[in-house]
Length: 473
Image 1: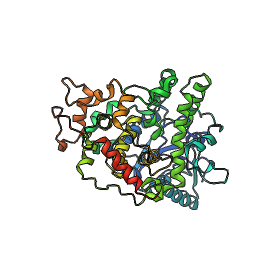
Image 2: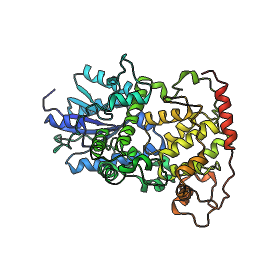
Image 3: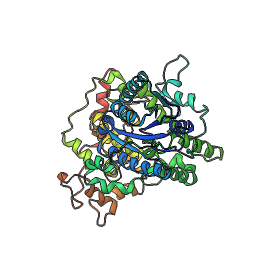
Image 4: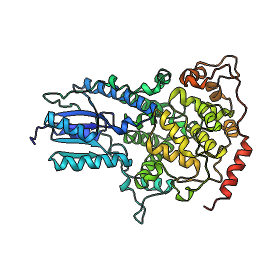
C-alpha cells in the first residue's frame, strides 16, 4: 500500500474527537482519514432506547466532523464485509479502531484484524474506552480481581496519561466513499411514543459532555458523598449517558476528579471510585464473560428465582404500579428520561429480585431496552450485585426496604411527587409525561387510583431470607 493511502477510522463506542488515541494516531500519520461507522448486527441488536441514543450520537458526531472539514461515512452490514468494500473503493491501507471488551465485540474484532492483516491491510486497535485495560490489572498471584476494594487499591495510584487534545486537522481523502443516510436507518423507530418524551432529557455529544463534567466539578462534586444518594436532587455527574458511547473519555473524567481532589473538594475521591467501579465491571466482563447472561457466582445456578415475565407482579414492576412509591417513581423516571438515579436502580433491582423473587435477567433485559446510558458491563454487574449472585454480594443483608430508603434519601418526597401522578390534585408535567411515554396498550391514566402494594415488604423480605437460608451456598 502507498504511504499516503487513507486510514479508515472505524468509530464504535468512541464518538468524540478529543482524547481519542486511534483518531490522533491516524491524524498524526499525515495520511487521509476516512471516519466510518458500521451499523452491524451488534448495533442492530440494541434495545430501543440505546439504539435511539446511538442514532442521535451519530448525527452529532457527523456534524462535529463536518465542522472540521471531514465526514462520517455510514454503512450497514457485516463489519468485515463493509470494511473490505470501503478499502476496495478508497484504496485504504489501514483500519484503526478503539478496543471494546465484551465477548461479541472481541470475536468480531479478532476476525477483522486477522483477515485484514492476511490481506496486507494494516489493522490497529487502541485503548480509549477504559483507563485500565483488563489484562493490565493483576493480583499478586497473577489472577484477576474478584472484589472491588482490592481492585480499587491496585489502580487508584496508577499513572493515567493526560488526555489527548482534539486533532487540529483531520486530513480528508481526495474522494469520499458513498454513505448511507442516517434517517433511513430509523434508529428511533422502536421508541414509538417515548421518543419525543425522552428526547429533551438527552445531553447530546462531546461538547455537552464536557460542559456537564465542568458543571459537576464546579458545583456538585464538593458535596457528592451525600448528594449522589439523593434522587430528588441534582447531585450526580450524570455522565454515564456520555461515557456509554464515548462522547467523553474516562481519562478526561479521571483527571478532572484528580484536580478537584487536589483542590480539597471532599467528594472528588468518591467520584474517582465510581469511575473505578465502571472499570471493575469491564475487568470482570473481560475475565468472566458469563457475567452477562449467567450467574457470576456459579453456585447460584439452581437458585429458585421466578423466570416467568408474564406474571402480574412483573408487569406491575415494569409499569411502575407496585404500590411502593420509591420503586414506582424510579420505574417511571426510566420511562420519561431514559435514565434512572443510581439509588433508584439499587431499590428497583433489590425489590424485583428479592421481594418478588424474580430472576435478575428480567430486570437486566428491561434496562437493556429502556436505558439511554445502557452499558453491557455495568448493567450486568449492577443487576448481579443487587441480586446477590455477583461480585461484592451480601445476599443475606442487602435486601433494601424501599419505604425506609425513601425516608432516608427522599424525606421531603420530592422524588416521588416528581414522578407519580395518581392521587394528586395537580400532578406536575413530568409525572404526567409518563402516560405519554408508555405503550397505549397498558391503558393507564393519571386518573387511576394509586395501587395498594402488591407484596407486603416484610413478608417479601422473609420469603427471600427463607430462600437464602435453604440454599447451600
